[in-house]
Image 1 (cartoon, rainbow, N blue to C red):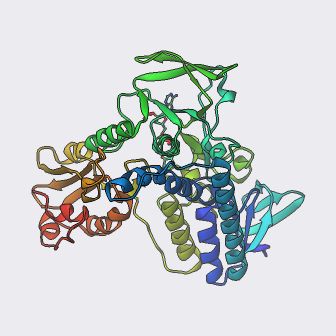
Image 2 (image 1 turned 90 degrees about the vertical axis):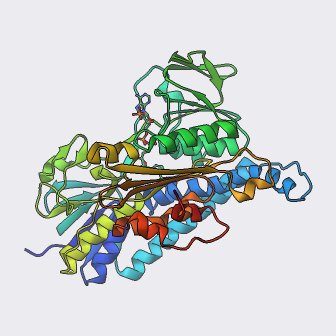
Amino acid sequence: MAYDYDLFVIGAGSGGLASSKRAASYGARVAIAENDLVGGTCVIRGCVPKKLMVYASHFSHLYKDAVGYGWSEVEPQFDWSKLVTAVDTEVKRLSQLHISFLEKAGVELIQGYAKFVDAHTVEVGDRKITADKILIAVGGKAVRPDIPGIEHSIISDDMFLLPEQPKRFAVWGGGYIAVEFASILNGLGSEVTEIIRRDLILRGFDEDIRASIQEGMGNHGVNFRLNTTVESIEKVEEGLKINLSGENAEPLVVDALLCATGRKPKLDGLMLENAGVETIGGAIAVTQDSRTTQSNIFAVGDCTDRVNLTPVAIAEGRAFADTEFGHTPQAISHENIATAVFSQPEACTVGMTEGQAREKFGDAVRCYRARFRPMFHSLTGAEEKVTMKLIVESNTDRVLGAHMVGKDAAELIQGVAIAVTMGATKRDFDATMGIHPTSGEEFVTLR
Ligand code: NDP
């Protein structure tokens, strides 16, 4: 049977864009549907605008740090609407750029919401489109606990569009999104309280790293309400009243509460049942090579809830296109994926945590730690520390994990991730000359 397209991609985010262009490069006839701005979460309401706001938030510290280096003190003024407008302009520019990349690649962009009619047919508006293969790359969305007044909270999508800076800002949750926005708003001068239901943020990260980030954020001025949860939210004259329970249950009054309690695949309305695509735990069930329960339909990125990171969605999408259209089967590994948290202090990680390593290798695990003041802060007087940690398997000497908290951590870990992915040993690390004076040299001199 002749189909309209060889490949129809649903969702023009990181995974969808990468796979559609790669498939088209092999000569496939490709269309991609998007019902919002082209670019997806990462470009429009995630990584990119977030990182720009992270940069903005660094300046308050830099102004202070400069004084130790002989610069005169300044009283900086910050203009929220100027930042939000500049970020929005950049986001729209990037979205247009992605549209032009699609055009250049020969991928047809179809604006609208796509839903399945059957395994080879989707409907976008009043148009029915057929395709040999279909890729679902619809991403995820924030979820909010069902408590009274939750409608008064905002989610991360809203952070980029707030007309005014919330001067008293609360964040609910202890994951990536929560700690990043707590740090951003703190850096921009808001009074920030982070509410977490445990005693440490960032569950899943190495314990030393969690403690270091939390301590560093506290030193920067973020207030933590530990072992505490939100019971209800009320609109009152002075702002939002947040009623809490747990260890630190005194109510809080703030201008905005960011609910950052997790995300889930955005599958509503896709009519997956019409195509025989099954889900598991709310995510599209896929094999390692991203095939769904319907043999001609594939899914990549956050809607499969594997490792929810932009580079992973891109790698999954390209591997799918190479395999299905380029006749060069590719498999990607979900092991040793380096990731960074753009909190202040910044943190990064690759490979196993100490806990994971001990679970797998028991006592055959050696840990190397360093904690020191980075050279930059020797003249600023700031209470800033760098924490570094290597996890090594004693029998093979192989480095199982590398972790860091501190200035430029995110920039530094990429090279270390190559070594860890290649199976480097501690001896390999030690045989590498350090670059002096940097924080990174500690990774090759840990004793
Ligand atoms: P996460 O799943 O990372 O964190 C959710 C947080 O909310 C956890 O601290 C969790 O606590 C808490 N939580 C969940 N439910 C409740 C509840 N009912 N009551 C109280 N607390 C609750 O989600 P995020 O939204 O922060 O991030 C989503 C994903 O986005 C991440 O997994 C990451 O892959 C990606 N991301 C990556 C970034 C990066 O690479 N820098 C930046 C931003 C997002 P507990 O730990 O106790 O379960």
